[in-house]
Image (cartoon, rainbow, N blue to C red; front, side, top):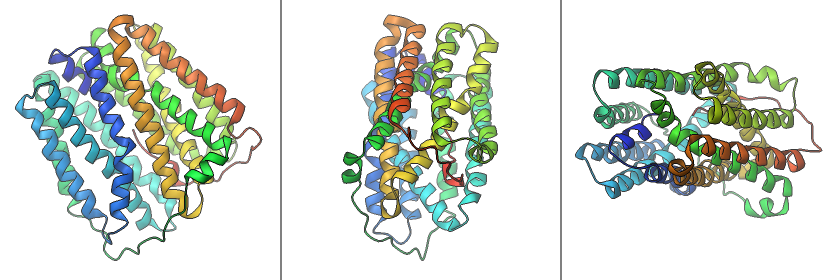
Length: 371
């Protein structure tokens, strides 16, 4: 993710094309998790689907090594991200199933995703400074191949198939709080579109090297790790509503800092530490609220809806808007637009989400996930 925008720019593509590629990546989250979930319901060993999706991810991404044109890149990214975005929720579901009643152990397992992100981003940044961005598809393909090999060592034999799920949409359409909550998730993820697609391009424009770009991305995930280590204690003292509103407010501040003060390194460092709020804290609260709203047999569909509405529809719209505005208005106004989307999300949450419910929710490992 941190180097994809830079790679496309090095090939001569303009901002609108970069935004379209990221929109395709996010857009596949609208359908792929649900589709694989339907297929997995028929299997006793869901790891077989994960392994198949992992294999197709490797094969698709390796096609970038053949120097395709832009339409070819879009097709490759579509196939890769469709498989990748379908695979990740299934693997997390398998992990939680294996943990059984010990879901508190999940945070310690998922934490290694954040650690792996930091190690990979920093390592790739170092390699690219010694070689060139042309080697980036090869590096990603190697990482995907290692994931495939790791998946082949795992299985889920003897799984008991779940009972038939109930309807989610009936519950959703009857409760304004749930509609408002998903609208907030949609807006916040749309605000991240500029960050995921163009933050590295902005840093490159400010003459940061690939190593420094990787380090700044890693700072955000490091802040996320620290938050995951302390969040369970925080839940004992603060309500979900308070944490939700605070994370949205800090997100507004983060985007404005990047928009207008990105030429100051200390400001960029602080803004990256705020990733703990804009992604980490919000995501933890989002998972917990989804768990509260969709109980029993509806939990899996509720979590799939959370992913599709936020990371799918929201991320796709954010990437498209950022790509269309980047060349015409510049980083300042694109990230200001992101701040505006976050501000609207704050107002919606303030008025409708958990307004009359200050009940604290016991924190569990289910609320922890990585970028």
